[in-house]
Length: 503
Image 1 (spheres, rainbow, N blue to C red):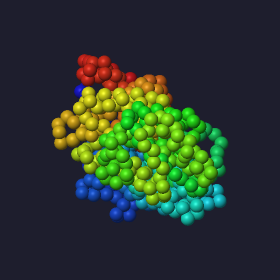
Image 2 (cartoon, helix red, strand yellow; image 1 turned 60 degrees about the vertical axis):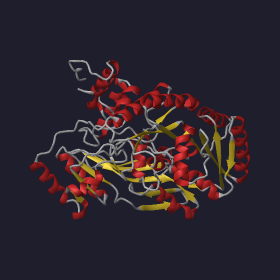
Image 3 (tube, one colour; image 1 turned 90 degrees about the vertical axis):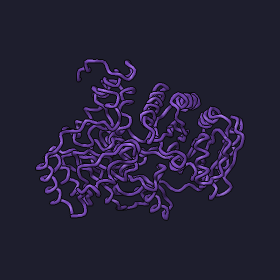
Image 4 (cartoon, one colour; image 1 turned 180 degrees about the vertical axis):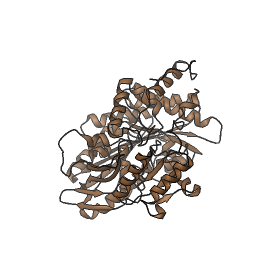
């Protein structure tokens, strides 16, 4: 076993299908799906060989694009009967490889489940299919004075089913919560083809809180076919502030001061200088490019509340050393402030051949210290890092810049990313905030959880999917992998011989 064997894409797959088995599977699925809904040719499969973690690519055995719940049920029953694994995929915008395909399995793409079934303005909910884009829910609800609060930066493209699978957040999650706080009911199909309803149309449901369990389960427990989301009334007023700082530590301290004051902003985001410059070149948001860090703070609510809190926050920012504080003078400028933040990822893509987007969470009080350590690690590895993150809830998104055409740089980027995630754990945080674990963070899960905890995770998985056919090899590492990962740390990247025994 070498270090390369623990790279994210090096996953053990179940047995490969023989040609006769593959022909049988294709024939069975053709009986379920219309002709254009089953892709088996190499050219048709290529667009599905990765998700947003594009550094790793693998062609799926075949792709199924169902349109009805019944088709999903029959596909899963067919695969279960043949011991064929299934990976569910939404819009493919996930950044941790959660929809990374299997060369011996079915990629079940839910993109054709793209209908908003009902908007109930009286009860402030909407029933939607999993392929509906996040932003499309708000666009449909706005005429009723409502909107859907979670707004990840990819909201123009990401689907609600993927948001539930990864427990996505967004720039307004500080005040309004993640996906788990904004849904009431999920309908999903288990690997044996059973349609189950989790949660309820009411605000609470009896029994264990399985809705929270399913949210963030990364497609390992079932395939989501319908979601009931909560809608909120559009605030009377929203206003944004932009504050510039001469150090990232000052900006981090300002975040803690705002929260400590009792003000809960709708959004509180931070960007460091490399991210500021990239976003300004791309969007022309009016950012101060000489600043070492900026904070974007949005206050919403009634007109009176916003007026009072804006002044309080402005005074706090200046007291914390802000060199400049701007208040958006109108709605257009508010949207421009946010446009730069939401375009930060593609903006960074313009200044580097490749970047590796990390996702970890830390206590807010440690923001300054962790950012300082990230800068030290950046120097150690010789790779630049642009920091963009949800400062209000401590959810970091360091963007590691590298060039995949340079031999060894992807490996260095991965190692640096792993060190950053381990740093988050050391400071009392966690290895993910909203992107999920997928294949990317399997090793770092070994740093955060012990063997007993991982065993319990596997037991939960087995309760829903005893044969382990739904998205195998993702999110929860095996104890054997963790033993190998721990041994590599002890032996500086070289495994001892003979190999460790399996658990």
